[in-house]
Length: 303
Image (cartoon, rainbow, N blue to C red; front, side, top):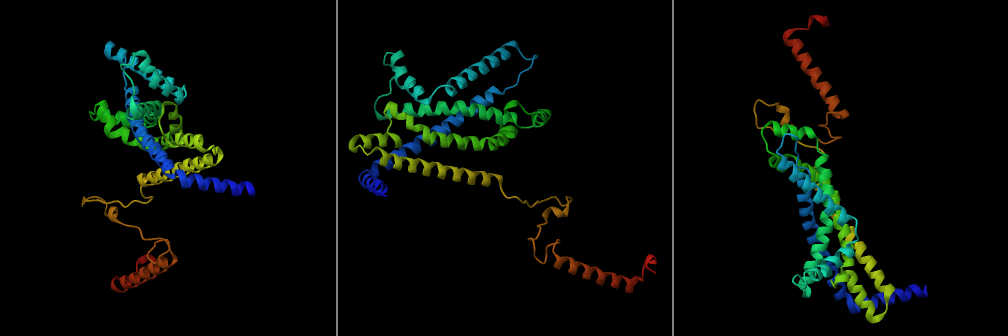
């Protein structure tokens, strides 16, 4: 209990003295994660679409060669950035480009550090998203592509109007997963001097040596960010899915009139499945039958 009380005291001391620095680190982490995820999605979307452009033996040899070469280059990009740690990618881009260009390409100042961090995380995210987009496109029924071609759509029109709206819905969980990963993986950007949440922790610990209490603050902060992102993404998925029940609306007078019918709520007197409705309906039918008998006589089958 003494250790726990001491831990709470140390955490309170750190929070009182450095909460501004912690919040700045959280802000930088979120900005980098959101921007890199959006940029990575665009890169992955472009690679995924280019990687699924069809070609046949009847196409021009130059077109087939170009598309094959394009697929090979995309495959190399995906395998390299998926198969190496992000921290090494940051080192190669931030320190490697100035090394090979004799300083003509260099990331100077805080603007340069932000640019390098955004490039690294975006390219890494794009490598994962390229495969997700390709899988989302492949998951769509090929019959829809054939139908679009049958009515004269080009490949671009088919992708924009038919395939991609459905594929994007299928890959939204993967986009959310990459965003949550980026929130955590931005912590490796301290290697190039980017001051995010984890780098803030390192700087604070270097001053007061309270490593574990600061690590607890970091753990709670990262967990809070990822949980909020997860809940937000689940809400977005439900919102995109829409309601479970739909009301058909028709403006064509020749269409079935039931198209504008709205089913009553369950367990109400107007519900066709409820006992109250069934009893009322039977009584109404009996009254109507008696009225018909009085007016036209009893049918022959009932005599």
